[in-house]
Amino acid sequence: MSKRVLLATEKPFAAPAVKGIEEIFSKAGYELIKLESYQEKADLLKAVENVDAMIIRSDKADKEVIEATKNLKIVVRAGAGYDNIDLETATAKNVVAMNTPGQNSNAVAELVIGMMIYLARGKYNGKSGSELRGKKIGIHAYGNVGRFVANIAKGFGMEVYAYDPFVAKAKMEAEGIKVVDKMEDLYKKCEYVSLHLPKTKETVNSINYDLLSLMPKGATLINTARKEVVCEKSIVKIMTERKDFRYATDIAPDNNDEMMDKFADRYFATPKKMGAQTEEANVNAGLASANQIVNFFEKGDITFKVNK
Ligand code: 3PG
Image 1 (cartoon, rainbow, N blue to C red):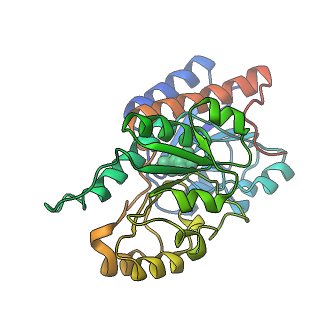
Image 2: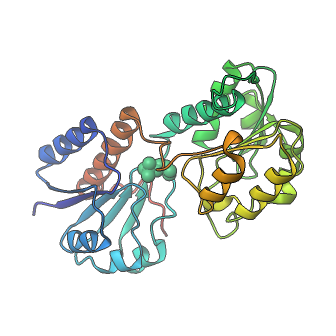
């Protein structure tokens, strides 16, 4: 029987990505239902009711959403972080959850570099700024995005350090990275730290005052991971104490107004998460999601499954 797939994207993909997704499902004989730019959770709850599969971005597939489905077999997060899916409920309902690792990583990495330059040049305020060349950058978690950031940073003449207890040291060193064994050392050494850790119980608020106060003069923290991993109170405290400290984050934190009032000249936040928002990343992640769904139903392929 023909499958029904929901594309639920509050922040829609670029048109070529949607076209590519349509083509993949049309070739497979599946029906595609699009729920783009929706405003209300109620719309999502209604749309998921009778579908066999769904593609989401940062859209929340929480308990209520998953439990509202009658036939759902697979949910694919078109992207890397899957903290927006309630994995326990998915597993309990026999729903396979997947992500599309690596597909949007370059887009995020380019935004990291863009934000670094923007802050190094004082948000283009006309005054003398600084350069990236010769500075040290610390990659906090060396996954797909971290690796892309490292490569681009090398091209800028930066010294690249990384901390990641889950990646073999030899592998990172083989890629020309200076590996530190202790997280604190990354912050002690590097003027720039770029965060790439997932949002988990352990990482929420883990980037705190104690860690940030280790950073050398001219410190810049770049957060394209999740806003929740950075402790908001700590950022306010360190930036109040240190006039040299800069912070850029991809998606405004809850205390954005306070940050703008106090630190507008050395703070930047995107109003909507922009890291993966390029046509190329949309096409890569969108088409990968569609192909993963077809391969799941047609071949039982569960590569990229993230729940138990
Ligand atoms: C990811 O985890 O892949 C990124 O945060 C992208 O999120 P988005 O699809 O909402 O842009």
